Length: 193
Image (cartoon, rainbow, N blue to C red; front, side, top):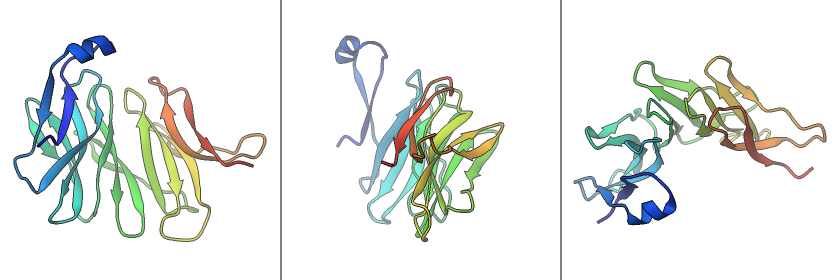
């Protein structure tokens, strides 16, 4: 059974089609691995391992040399690792609990770093990051309480989490969904005012 796959060599679409594939499997049939992101050189996958018996998922990394390594935090019902930096040293994910979720950033040196939501929101959900992992974009939202629906944010290692302001025409950026490799440009979704 195929649980995840990764391209072993990089290059143009032509060379990818001609390349070989490596199947990444977990030995336990009650577990399945979903890959969500891959490092620039293809050496690290990040994602989540889902347990069909416990109905939970946990953040995992995979490398050819180290196999699967859990970076899970106890207490979350779902804790996927979503994005890995270009060199594989920074990972972001979301700790999902019953009434809220919190974005986290992880490095081997620092461990977990939570993105605390601004006061008007109860949750944060991160998306893409810059190649170096020092700029991450996403969405602050209300999952478990009444309040503003959502607003896009940018997080930097030097400045922390900042909500993106409304445009000059009053449109609120709802979710930041893309970032340039150098972290200087952000794209996303706005409301329809």
